[in-house]
Length: 310
Ligand SMILES: [Zn+2]
Image 1 (cartoon, rainbow, N blue to C red):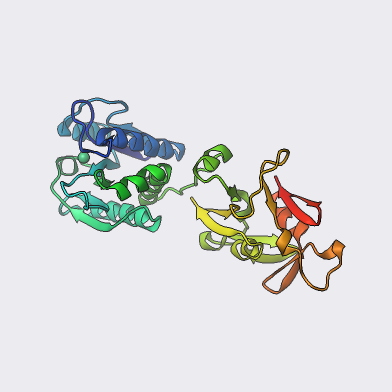
Image 2: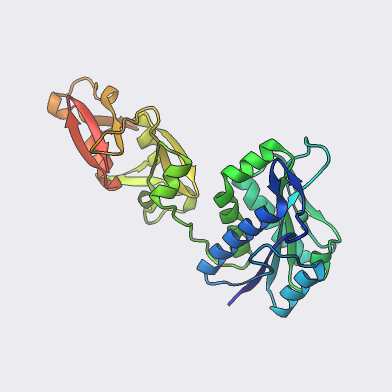
């Protein structure tokens, strides 16, 4: 079993950086617990230097990792600068550590590829105590700057996404496949009110990650983006899942909490009333009922308007 130490920076009397009403020690603890939980779900053995608000010396942290025989050490911090304009993400490793550099590079790239940064400050080498005195490949992530509003907004609004990206990078480093945490509908709706989560649908055999956004309808593989955009929906991606933003069409209804009204899409020339429920996608005419079949959505009609509901 791969062993990793997740170190929440600061704690107890040491608040770390403070700004905009936040204390670094609280953010690092929440993030460390979230990251560790995801890693544990992937079968890793996780050592937390702290699981509550307590003071630890830098030496305590390094020793904790060494006694645990960690295969990697991840210290989580939030940056500080007197200048509130300072912003961005950076990841440190010990000077001369090849494995540390590898892990730091994977980490920085993953967070950047997920858009979780306001500025890419890059991978840096530094003689930080916890990097130098831990035996395992060690990195220290400065998530963002605590006095910068844009940075803190990004972090707070995407907290779980940060945790997932950090965990994903650690798993990648250890050659463990990352299985995305599927947010529950309630979790999802909390963040983005008018969004339909279509996660199950993207898993079409034989497609790689970048290609899984296809759905098979009547024997045709159609990119989900094309399909949903042809229905006038805004397509996005969240945590590896395809989402359709229903905000412009969203008309919640007493009985059907989530419904899409596609009335303006029904006017396709040459089709009878019974047939107007057809949409043209990439040159193919597909009955709307079939379009939504793979999504496990129910298709209904009301006053010539198609209603899609869960
Ligand atoms: Zn710190």
